Length: 161
Image 1 (cartoon, rainbow, N blue to C red):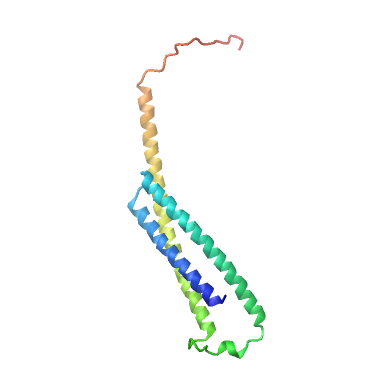
Image 2: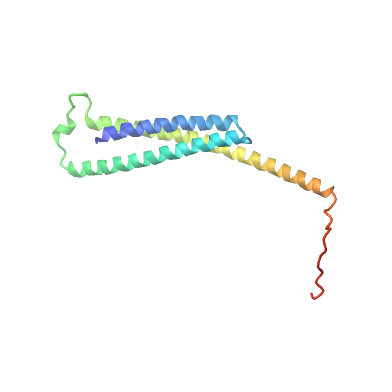
């Protein structure tokens, strides 16, 4: 497989990951994750994202080994590589560098969205912690004003201590 094809496949994975990250950001902005449905959607999106990240890592590894083998086999630069191909008027190196630039831009955009999403998730987690604290405080208050359970059975007193 050619390196340009691998980069094209990697670009498709990154575009899908970008779309998924935008959906994750929209979900975080619109939801407080107090309902089971929202938490289920979050888990589904994160699971899909994890799969895409594994696919991207595999493609990057494959591209890295292919690039390394190409560099080793092309130590003396051949003239045919620097000449334009019949199907494209640009040299191969220009196509590769433009593909890597596109990939870098996609990754930077994904990282920026991830940072925003991470902050929104952190705020949601803090809000959920506050809600749990309120519930626990309410339960403690209710217990303070209720009678203690009376023990109807017998009990044992240890006088040896």
